[in-house]
Image 1 (cartoon, rainbow, N blue to C red):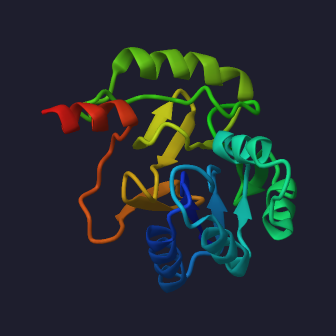
Image 2: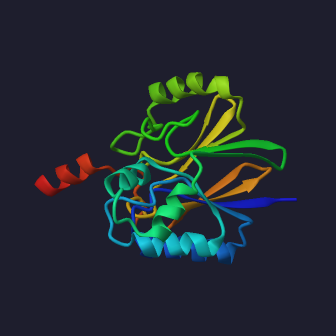
Amino acid sequence: MSIKIGIIADIHATAGPLRQALEIFQREGVDLILCLGDVAGYGTELEQCIELLIETGGTTILGNHDVWFMEQNVSGLDKSIEAFFNGLPAVWESAVEGKRVFAVHASPPVLMSRGITLLDQYEKLMPDKKEQWACELQQYDLDLLLVGHTHQVFAEWLGKTLVVNPGSTAFNNTCAILSLPGLEVTTLPLSEKKVRKVWHWGMMRQSFRS
């Protein structure tokens, strides 16, 4: 039996690409949807994004921007938004089709701000980073690790662990579908925009100056 998992991350309060990703997942018949955190931040459509995630019945984990949003809006926060974020776990783990799967926003065991960066600004794999993270992940004995945070798109074997980052729906214009037990990953474009395997604010500032 094959299980399909739809993976999204770093929505950043931008509803359009999230909605399209969820439509793709429905069309492709995914069995489970995982959102790897950072529902909040940057954009202005947080409430719409939360409503979409709740409607799908998938699983969402906490990201650093979600925590910051809660800290910065202690008073006067909409109760439904507060309840949503308070109900999110920091990690998700399960055995799926005989594979041990672990999902966290940035990196294990429960880190939300130290992300796994494997690509340089030219979207090329950095061998030294791949070796570094392969060594660090040995201790966790995982078949599959799902992460977000770094706004990079990759599916790489780091030692015995397949590490998947679907990229940001808002900034990389991507989502991903994972098929188990075969560990096949398909990256899908969103919003009819070019897939950007690497995106961060520093690059954007440089492009604005040039």
